Amino acid sequence: MPYPERHKLLTVIGTTFNGVEQFSFSLRIIPDVAHLTVDQAQVDALAAATSTMFHDANLAICPWNKMTAIKLAPIGTDGLYPPGEDAVEHNYAPAILGGAVVGTIIWPPQCAYSVGLKTAADRGPGHIGRFYLPTMAYNVNTSTGGVGDLSVSISAPLTTWIHAINATANVGTVGVIGKVGSGSSRVATGLRFGSIVDTQRRRRRQLPEVYTSTAL
Image (cartoon, rainbow, N blue to C red; front, side):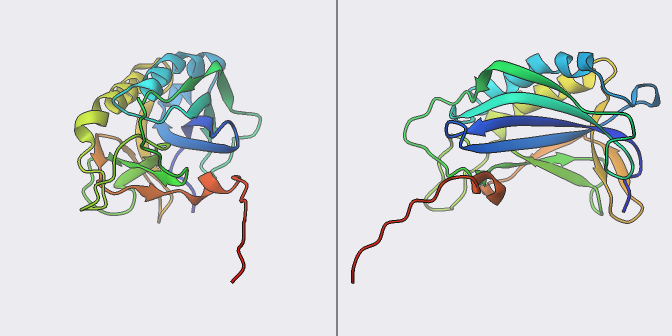
């Protein structure tokens, strides 16, 4: 099904485990009709706020996750780049490391914490979105199997980042845009934080598997 309107897609891109594996996560942005296209000035204007978010010690992204670029793409109602338009990137040199102070906490690369994007709708298609952060330095509770309430630690850096996106000239407003049914487009009004670590299997597909065997 088509999207209900043109929009923009902001993607955070990086590598992990010395570049062996990659990660990415994205936000959809609702632009005003006068600024549907993307340009280099827009993505460059988002670079500092995104770097600050990614490196924030309270967010605790593990430092072997390195953010190498952000990409801002125009998305048509068909989900593709509109004819004659292309994405623009801001590359970080050097890469931005996750800001966690790491001791012995190491999540496998496919373990990802899901952050929910709330809207004014309480239910139904497109009432909430989500994005998956790279591995973080938070303990998993051996009694509950979860990480507990992370909102106290991570809500501030993420909220500050989204507010910065919304305040950037000509970019638009972070939202949740869905294709189910006739489609939906809603501004993000809040964040939701769970207690269980999720899984993104695509973040471990390029790790080389090394087998050993023993005789019976």
